[in-house]
Length: 333
Image 1 (cartoon, helix red, strand yellow):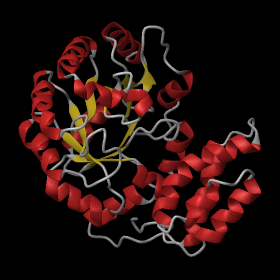
Image 2: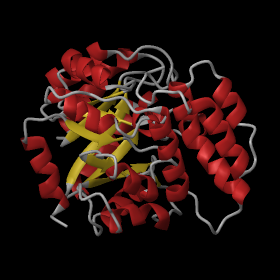
Image 3: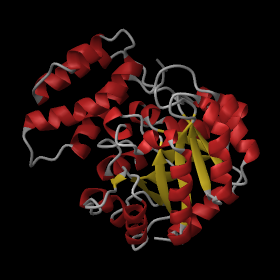
Image 4: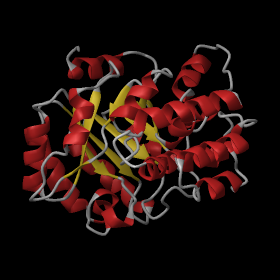
């Protein structure tokens, strides 16, 4: 594989928008990366976050996304934590692997994370972010990136955050246009993402609510972002990256049929469900993906209601076929 840093720089040097697959814990793992490439794939991949604390070790399962990267595209290793020596230690260790960049998670909205003052919880302490970024900037010799939200519960802090980001010479910033407490509810603030684009010297990716090629185009238009980071939209619609590229080239954007969506679910099951674990555990893992697919393919909520109650593989696919045979995968909820 080519040098990841050079691949990363080449992506940013080309005129087309950079399309990144967002990190989603226990979802966007190595098997999912592999499957995504078969549907056109992203330009840039982020690992699930490495949990970093005083007694932490780099998780072997997440490391495999770096050492066995099947995408042919650069991969960025994301860390989450708040202890400076531990983050410095982990950043040094991660740079021994084929990474394009080290990314710090400042956006995870899960209560179990932010209550520990990690992820989005750090947005309540700008001074602490300043110290962390300063320490990491000194030891990261690959590219250094950050994924953030607008603030914890009030976007008024975002201007202060931008000054901190500018101070530490980031190589890329991804902005999810909501606060932490908004979770995934409410509109994306494209205006504040545009503020980041216009005020920072580094490229900015826009993140949040990109579920179709049309929404991708509108987000790029409103923000002026260098590209897009897409998570839930790509999980529900693996054709999305290819559709965005087609629209940018002025080519037809075809919608996936119900049978194509069902075929994707079968391939997803085969890709991410280990035969070494119980069938019930396989089905539980699939439910994480189906939450995103169901929300788009069947906004009525009947599908997600039924799929959450299945226990076995046969029942799982019976529910999928009953609800999705006539669905269209690209319609946004």
